[in-house]
Length: 153
Image (cartoon, rainbow, N blue to C red; front, side, top):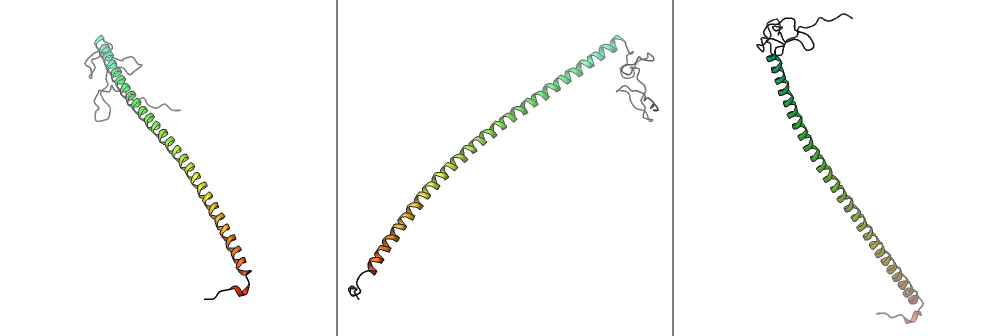
């Protein structure tokens, strides 16, 4: 496999030239030793000097503080969102329970109403049967009368 040419590393603060390459910063690429020691265009210090190291440490500390602050903000937002989810889920289960109880109550009420209506229908059927029997007996009694006993108006 052919090796790709290694791109020239630029320090993040170095400006680009027309050809797209910036002036090389004398700050070494991470993991490499500096090739020459001249003042850095970006920092104005000699790489590896105490000032350069302390500035780098300060920059790292500032970056770490920014990351910690960002993490704390993200964590706070996540906790708030989690609390909201818990509240919404609790409300949902509460509403579901209320709905289930209302449904059960409505089913019981409907069952009781159905039993009352069936009992009333049975009573009406029984009354109807009794009236039919009474009318049948009366009709039979009228048919058994002697023919001369009829009255005309």
